[in-house]
Length: 169
Image (cartoon, rainbow, N blue to C red):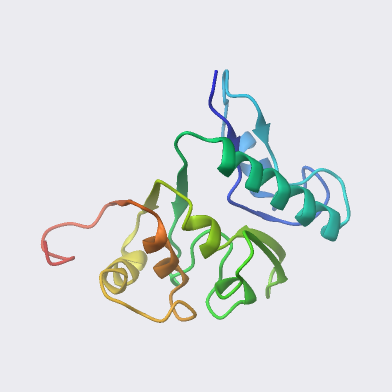
């Protein structure tokens, strides 16, 4: 009953549009149960108002939370959340960034928000992501591999399907 679920990133557009991360989570069966509130990024407002509302809500939830956990993915290009390589979100110092990517208008948390997480849990499955997992073990420029920003969280847990010695372990 004290769990709040918020999105990490979203593709801007009308509420419920088919490319919406939130819409896809709901279609996949997300049932937050007793979690209140459940906070979606899209609320039928213009982009600037959406970013302003989400930034304020994120700041308040980060301030109030006893424990802050982020569940994120890792892309084959090294992105995490909505932070694509060489995007303005990589160097943004506010908690939230919005920018026009090649495919979508994006709204995402930033490294500044990741730095406030007690734990970042990253799920990376598929052989196409293994090179990025290897790179994540070394220091890389964040513009080249935005997933480097995950190292700002107090703890980082990576769940993957790599086999054998692939990651040198």
